[in-house]
Length: 234
Image 1 (cartoon, rainbow, N blue to C red):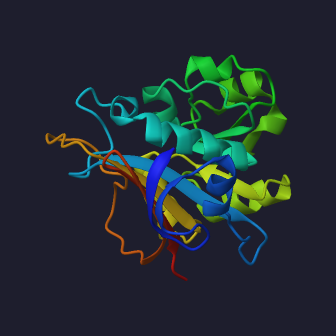
Image 2 (image 1 turned 180 degrees about the horizontal axis):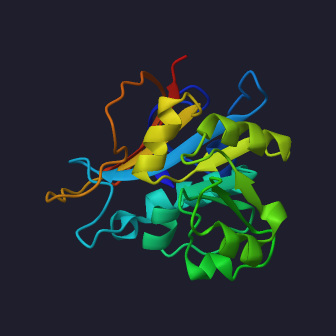
């Protein structure tokens, strides 16, 4: 990645070639007090759209964002994503455990057909799709995290209990809002692509208002694409 390092705690600033080793340093994360680190990775246009005109994130991705997306997946122990995003973006197995958050207990057929153990459902006791999910995924691959709504603090504890300490969230916007609201997120990674989308599209965070302070620790630039990291202030 031929970039300008605009700001970094771990990589010298200036024009440089950020190789794989430098990228690892740039995204190095110290565990939080409970031994975990939860980062969420999102992408948006300059005017704040988390979707292209076709309603999917993939249409605003570019090569710079894809390299960081792949790198962050390689660093983590587990990927967490909302069922709506998994469905819209046609998620398949992630090459490591994939936790799908669904209040209804329903996930897309591609994930239901994935090898057993590669997909874990995080849902609630009264989810209408719970019986079918248990049959398809196996009881051991279904987390019950509340009666009617997802307890995201319990989700963090459950991931820790399974030995996953480096956790990568990939949205969607409503899941990110709920994670931020209960203080589960340690870090937000955001790629800003040099495009304006306009129209009625989701932002990276959707739902009831909240105000979460962030501390910037990294900003890279390549061909107009900005790639940053912000730590959540405690």
